[in-house]
Image (cartoon, rainbow, N blue to C red):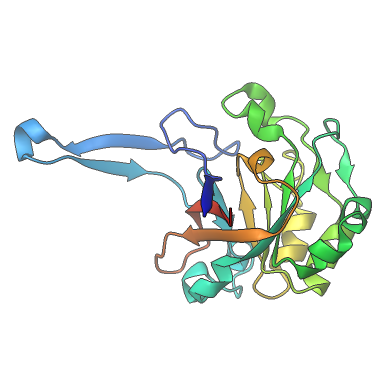
Length: 215
């Protein structure tokens, strides 16, 4: 078995969505004073590699803590979009190329290669986004979730959030953002485990996402 970490590391200088409070990590207890070390986290629920729940946008939407654990584990497929340019749309032609595998997958992860800009100003730029047609396909085919190596699934300047609203407004779909290392997986199906922190009334949460592959 091979396990690939798809998670960005939380640190004080990490990228956060524009307007979001930056992450703060403070030493709360020290070896010298207390005999042990603990760290105090000050982060929002959508910091780093994280998951959006329907409750993120809809007051009556499902919360992450209401979802069963199996919602966060399943067969996944990476869709390679690294040939696209900044601002390009990811269309259904990408799905049609691997339709049989895409239909069988429970999660679709889109590899734009944008994670190479993590920590740079370019990360907040005009990254590729999926089409509304792909959003409809993900819903109609009963996917558990979709994931991206970008800071959002809508353009960073689009405050109307049409893709978020379509996906989160229909059932218990989850969205994962700020993934990394999708280029290390290949083109076949694998097991994705993306477990969010479990807290009351969770609108979203940081996740430790991993790809589990049979060798």
